[in-house]
Every structure is written in structure tokens, then in C-alpha cells.
Length: 261
Length: 261
DNA sequence: CGGTATTTTGAGTATCGTCAAGGCCAGTGG
DNA sequence: CCACTGGCCTTGACGATACTCAAAATACCG
Image 1: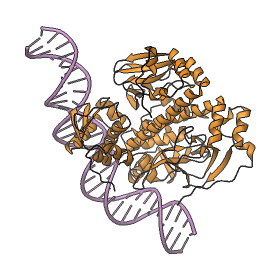
Image 2 (image 1 turned 60 degrees about the vertical axis):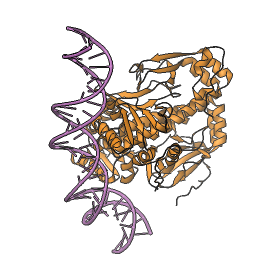
Image 3 (image 1 turned 180 degrees about the vertical axis):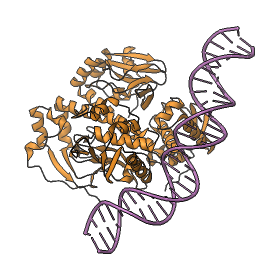
């Protein structure tokens, strides 16, 4: 359903929209119109994409890589409030300025549409309008999933929930091919300090929690930013296993211990 | 057992849409069309409105009172992920089932539109379409504000941030008239257990933090669910004062204009 | 007025935040 | 090629905070 087809298309331009699920279902006409008002921009890790307070002149869609959304506090510190991955949009269609900064967390490619023509196109194309709305709905759900992650009382639990999120929602983006067998690998796209703020903790505590999980055999720390997932089931248990169904699906091909209450 | 109960069909038709900001700007024609497919339902505190997993047959808008959005875990415990107040919509227009339960936190009035005709109307009326989209954008922002609240490392800070939210975003809804001078009163619409889960803590810790704030003179605990705000500025400081501007507005004098998404 | 649920308090322990130091890695310059 | 430097991650120690368990006090409801 969500498969993007490797386009056997003649023009290079036509490929610009490819790979983004939500655009795949659009009509030929709408896609062509989008094509005309878009451009691809590449960002290096750490580079700013949009700043809070300014009404972005374009609506963006992540094509590759990971962007982080953050609020800059008055004292200069930054507070991450979410990550944007392939297919996520930003830029407040029809609305005022953004309330958050957006920066590239990894090298990233952004597909950007000039605001005015994009809004006009949305008004004119019901299918695009609907795609935008569904995208918002999806982001809303994910923001609420974040809340559940953050509502975990212990750092270990929040970290486990976060890793779980990386394995499920961001599957195929943050995760990498397994090394032969069934071992799943996850790349953490942000540093310890940022991760700590995201999880409402401190870098030291995050590090300790991470190593505690490793000591208990739930994960392997291959590199500081690269983890191997050993037991997804135990991880889910640690996180409070809110959605046991989805985990079960993932664990299906893994020798995870199933101990549902 | 909570059961959904259809409310009385609207008879005072003309006034049904009144009082909800986002509908005020709609065209006469759209409002009339909405009028025809809506009904008002009243819920008692604790009563269920929609259950997760089912595609709601209604798109709802809160008219009065407070609803809570929650995820029911496999073990029966519930996890609150947000509160809905006047003007907030729920029901995933154009999309599948809800992922959360919705229950009345206080006695509430919900304006509900039958899904099919509502979606048809949205497709037909650009102004309504845009109102729905702006509403989603606003909810997304508030969900992210929640994340910042929850990312506070200490319970005191999270609690202070939560109270601040009640004073700003839910102003006039959770807040009550001041008793004479500058003292603001806030009603907490959920019990300690729910509040604790919402803030990623335990009822005991929430109670202690609350009384600690009271001992330090930031608030008064009039009843377990009714607080008097003594010093908004100190509260903001406690919370980490992310948005000092808005606080300054409130701390000075009102009336604060409703913050637009 | 009694019964129940919720909130609060208390004591003990685990966890976490804080401060400070040490280690690892990459890039830089001798 | 190697020492040096700076950033990030990790570790250690200690004090503060928060969770757990248990019990008492209070509010709520009929």
C-alpha cells in the first residue's frame, strides 16, 4: 500500500516527488503542478533549515535524513520537541510563523515548495488538500506517542520507549540492515545532550541507562550512536509495552521472549 | 461500565455553533450547512465519548467542559495524553479510527457532526476546510508544548509548567474569576492519579510537589482540585520560563488575547 | 451519619541530578 | 608520523529527588 514504486520515468524532474509515500497517491495533474513549484535542498548535519518566528517562505517535506524540531530558550539552550523523517512536512500551511527552529540532525534532503503557489494548489486540489490533512493527523498522533514515551517515570523506561519508537515508527530510516541474522541495528540521530533533553534527563543519566540496558542484555552498544537490539520484547516490557501488538509483529521474526501479563 | 448515550437532538438550533471561535469566521452558508448535520450531546464526568479503535461516526467539537484523551493499556490502566477544551475537535476527518479513548473529565457538552456529511461539507467548503486545518495545526503546537512540559527533569518543574498551561492556554476554561484582586483560581480537571501519569510521576510525588509549591507561597491549595495562583512569575521560573513573553502579559494585567495557533 | 475513594503523610530505598575527572575519537599542527 | 587539542561520551562519588510501601487524614456520596 505504502510502497513507492521505483519510477521508470523519463525525466529527472519527475523523480523529485518519488519516494514520498503521501505524494504517490496524488493525481498526475497535481503531481505535475507540485513539480513546477518545488526544489530540492540539501543540508549538512547541524545546519539550520528554518528559524522560529519567521513565516517560512516555503513548505518543506523531508526526502531523506532526519531533521530535528527545537525550541530555543531565552538563555540560548535548545529543547528538542520532535524529529522529522522522510515524508514529514513542516511549514504551517495557511498559517503564520513557525514556533520552532528546524535543523538538520543528519545530512538531509528537503523538498521545498514555495508557499504561495503551494497554498493555491492545495486550495485547488482536493487530493493534495487531503494528503496534507492526513499528514497533520499523523504528526499529531506521533506527538502524542511522544507524550507517552516522556510520561514514563524512569529514565530507563523512557529510553526503552524511545528506542522502541526508533524501531517501529522510524523503521527503515533510523534502522539499518541486520548483520546477517535477526539482529536489528538502530542509529541514534542526535547526541547524548540532545537526547537527554528530549527525554527530560541529563546526558550522564542517559549514558548510564543505556549501559544498564546493555549490561542486562537488551541491547548492544556498537558505537555511541549505533545500537544493536537484542531483545525487543524485553525492551517493550521495560518501556511499559503500550502497544504490544505492533511489538509482537516486529518481534515475530526475532527470538524475543513473550511474557504478556 | 460507561456507555455512550446519544444526547437530545438540538432544538435551539440557532445557538448551537455559537461560542466556538473557529466557527465564528465561517460563512453564513457553511454555518447553516453545519447546523443541519450537528447535534449537541451532554456527557457526565467520567463518561466515555469515543473508544479507541473504532472509527467514530462523529466528528466532535467541545462546546463546554473538558475531555481527556487517553490510551488504555493492556492491563487496564489508562494513560492520559491530552485534554480537550472548548473549540478542540476530534475524530480524524477523512481518516481511520482513533488511536485514543476520549472521556469526559468534567461534565461536558460536545457538538457532533455526522461524519459522512461533515466530510462532504469540508470538501465543498474551503473556509471550513481551512478552519479544520488550522485547528489541527494548533493542536499540533499544543502537543509539542506538552512535550516541553514533560521534558522538565523535576516533578516540581513539570507541575509548575502544567499549572502555567492551565493559566494560559486554558484561560477562562479551567480558570475561574479571581476573588477580588489579582488572585487567579485554577481548577484541575483530573484526579491526582491521572495527573501523575500525565506528568510522568506518581500521585504521592505530585501531592508533595504541590504542597511544596504551596509552602513556598507560589500557590494556595483551596481544595485538592482547586488552586489559587499566588505568583505567576515564580511559577514560570520554576517551570523554566520558556515563553517569558506570554507570562509577562498575564502577570501584568489582562485581558490576554487568545493566543492564535 | 457511616462507608468508600481519594488525597496526604511518613519512612526507607532506589534513582537521578550534580560536580568533577577520566577516556575516546577526530581534526590540527608540528 | 606523532603529540596536541577540543568535543563528546563515560565513569565515579555524593547529595537531592522521587518512587515504593504502608498508614492516616480528608473529602465525597448516599
